[in-house]
Image 1 (spheres, rainbow, N blue to C red):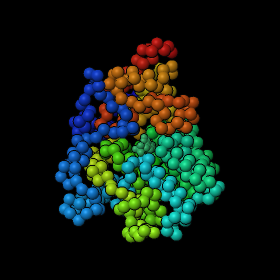
Image 2 (image 1 turned 180 degrees about the vertical axis):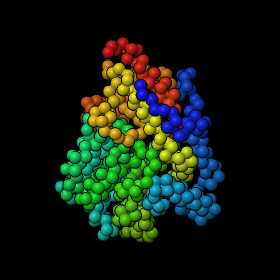
Image 3 (image 1 turned 30 degrees about the horizontal axis):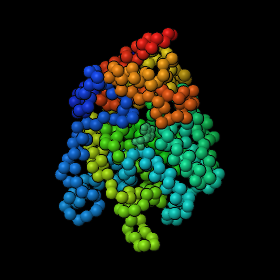
Image 4 (image 1 turned 45 degrees about the horizontal axis):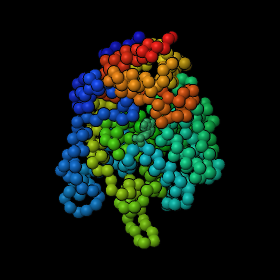
Length: 435
Ligand code: PLP
C-alpha cells in the first residue's frame, strides 16, 4: 500500500473531534467510525448551540412583526445569509434559502416551467422552453438533479439528453461537446459525484454551455463541505447546496444565482413574504432573494448553518480539502488492495489521468451483497452507506444495482480509514467467498 506522508496533512482531526459530541459515542460497545458524511455530516457543538440559543433567546419569525424579538430574528437571519453567501463567494442577495438541495433544484425547474407558461416579467421569456429544446444532464447525477429535469421536459415538450461517463468515472467531454448544441437551453450537472468522488471539470462544461447560450445549474452538494468554493468564479448561473451535508442542520440549503438570472426568473412557490402588493385579483413580487422565499422562513436553521460555515472557515477550506484528499488517497489505495473490490470510477488505473477527488469511494465487493457488507461493517461500529445512493442510472452504467460507499469529512482520521479497510478485508472470508 502506498501511503501519503502524514506531513502533507495540515489539519489535525484529533484536535477537532472533541467539537463533535456524537463522535465520542459507541455502537454496540465499539467506537463509532462514521464514514457516511456524504449522506449527512455530523454537527459540531457550535452549530447545535447556535440553533438552541436562537430558540431559547430570540425566537420569532423573520421579516414579520415590529416587536423586539422579530427585529432581532430578522437581523440574525440576514446576517446568516451574508455569512453563508460569503462562504460560496456570493453577495447576500444572490443567496436564496431553500429547505435543501432537492428543493433548490425543484425551485429552478419549476421556475423555468413557469417562464415557459409565460409567467413572470418580460425578461423571464429568455428561460422559456419550446418543444424540441434540450435540457442536458449527466449520467452521474443524483436523482435530485435528474428527476426534476425529467418532469420539466415532460411538462414543456423539451428533450432530456445526457453526457455519458467513461468507464474510469470521468465525464466524456468529447461527447459533451456534441450533446450540448444549438437546442440546449439548460445544462445541469454535479460538481462532485456523490458516488465517484471525482471533481468534474466545471469550467469546460460552463464554456460549452455558454457557447450556445444555455443556462448552467450546478449541484454543489458534495463540493461545498469539502473544497474552497467560489461560485461566481466557477461561472455557473445557478447552484445549490445542502446545509446538513456541510455540518449544518436539516431543513436548510442554499440556491445561489447570478443577479441577472435571479432577477429574471419567475417565482415557484408563492404566498406570504414574497410580495410587495396583493389585491384579490393579482400580486406583485419582491426582488430576489425574497421573491423565492414564500412563507415563514427556517430562521434557526439559517443561523445554525452560518455557525457551520464559520466553523469550516475557522478550520480553513484549503486545509479541509488537503486533509480529505489524503484520507481519500489512503481509502482508494487500500481498497485497490482488497481482493474482490471493484471501485466505481478509478481514473488513475484506467487512463493514467490525474483527477481531483474528495475523500469518498464507492465499490462493489465480488460475491457479497452491498447490504451484507454494510451490516458486517456496522457490527464493527463502522457506518457506511449501501444501495444506489440515489444514483440508480450511474449504477446501471456500471452493471450494478447497489454499491458500498465510504465517505469522509474533516473530522475523520487516517486511523479510522485503516480500521475500515481492515474490517472490509475480513468480509469475504467471513461470508466464505473464495478468491
Ligand atoms: N445532490 C447530491 C450530489 C447529493 O449527494 C444529495 C444528497 O444526497 C442531493 C443532491 C440532495 O440533497 P438533499 O437531500 O439534502 O436535498
